[in-house]
Image 1 (cartoon, rainbow, N blue to C red):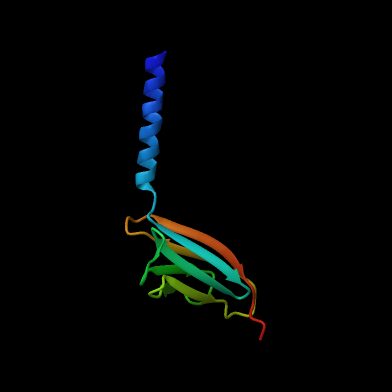
Image 2 (cartoon, rainbow, N blue to C red):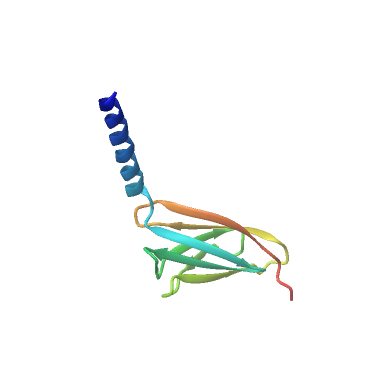
Length: 106
């Protein structure tokens, strides 16, 4: 029984490390502010400059992050839109998030 428990524990630990190794090293945080969204891309807590962000659901579809790792995305249409944001890590893994952006008030 002890050997079986050891084998199960070892397999669980190995699987956990393997999953961690496959996890992306970047993070994307999207905060909606009415008709705008602030997007911040970081790697190990530090901003990532010149990272391409694909956006679907709005007029413009590609944005590049600033030296601070951020970009502001605006809904310039006259209607509520659902925006989908996708950033791809260097390892090829994609991170995607969605938010609703209100129509501009002017």
